[in-house]
Amino acid sequence: MTSADAKVVVCGCGHWGKNLVRNFSELGALAGVSDPNQALAEKFSQQFSVPALSWDEVISSTEITAVAIAAPAELHAKLGIAAMEAGKHVYVEKPLALTRGDGEALLEVAEKTGRQLMVGHLLQYHPAFLALRDMVHNGELGRLQYVYSNRLSLGKIRREENVLWSFAPHDISMILALVGEAPDEVTSTLSPILHGKISDTAQVQLKFPNGVRGHIHVSWLHPFKEQKLVVVGDQGMAVFDDRADWGQKLTLYRHKIDWQNGIPTPKAAEAEPVPLPEAEPLKLECQHFIDCVEANKRPRTDGVEALRVLDVLLAADPIDPAVSSGETAARFPGVKIHESAYVDDPVSIGAGTKIWHFSHLLGNVQVGSDCSIGQNVVIGPNVVVGNNCKIQNNVSLYDGVELEDGIFCGPSCVFTNVNNPRSEIERKDEFRKTLVKRGASIGANATIVCGHTLGEYSFIGAGATVTKDVPAYALMAGVPAKRIGWMSKAGGRLGADLVCPVEGTRYRETEHDRLEEVTE
Image (cartoon, rainbow, N blue to C red; front, side):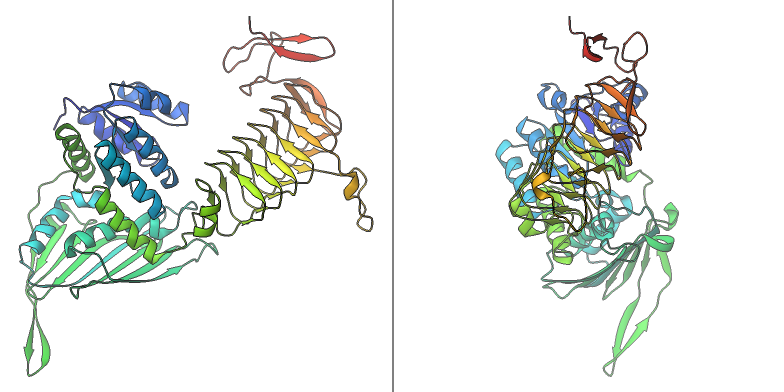
């Protein structure tokens, strides 16, 4: 299978994205790769002889016809909408989105732009499922009565989403395709075992208007791997076992239930393996996307199908631990806030920011866009955090701290706000301001004594205690911290030649023990 016209860029080259890169390359459609991790993008660029592109380059290119998005689910809507508005067809990994509003927005933009939107419900392209679907729709199993799916394994255990959102979209997609309608009743049991807030196992029960019942069991805390879909009709049964060899992946059982004097009596039959063509499901899925791009036709797993799957997910888990609650989402659109975090009023948070487990933002706090606030972080009151800041676990930013853009705060680093604290004496009127200027980095367990300024792109070593103002680009270490060298913007330690070892930028020392970048 090859392609001549579709030019696809894979955006996201990580755990699953690398498989998309390989398949689109083998199909002759790979036009480039893109990943925030530039080193990873360059690796695949060299391996598959395609350019490594920034997201802006992908969007602005007039030659790229489509993008395949393998980014975190909270970015699906943002990236998919931008790509379609730039004239690209979009393939996006499951799930379609994390909220129905985002899902609807993707569908609206696809309709408005005339671009195809396809979602990676992979098993709908598996030869075994395609054969099973045809058996059901052709009536070989009689009237459909019951469908259940087990997707069980030991790992990969995630912390950014629960097992339902990670595993179940495939099973929901298959069951909806077999039944042919949406359920009118969804009940679920989600069990957090390893972590108090993130479910490791889930059971979902589905009841359909036509009387069919469904059951889904997913777990990443299971002693062995099982991927099995069982379909029960009144004239036969079938099993799709994706762990079996190709000759046994789909098995037909022509079992029947005879009723004698009102008593159901099973009538068993021998198992009949169903012959299947051997093919990689992901390659078939990628080829289907290419075909839809080139013919501008609607994909099998389009946005409408994916929105039905999303509806079941949301019905089974109306408050997903990986995303904001509805109330919080309305307050801070485009922001991801774990349900264990607290956000007081008034607070402003820029789009793209993530706030993780057990963190607390107090009143009169401003947080910019695209920040990452780790676990057990306290910010405020009266604190300003700029754009693109990364605040690691167990950091407290107290009254009077201001971070400009691009600040890194390592785990458990400390900011004080008064010089001579006593538990029995209140000194809130003596709080002193601490300013951390653009691009500075603060190492783990460092202490920043209040009332000082950390210069642009300064670098505070782990465990250091800062007791005075820090010059721009200074590398500080020790207790009390002293300058032991210079650091470049890119985070490279400068040698005697003052040339950045990372990107080659030149610097020079000036009067009063200061450093500046050479721009001429």
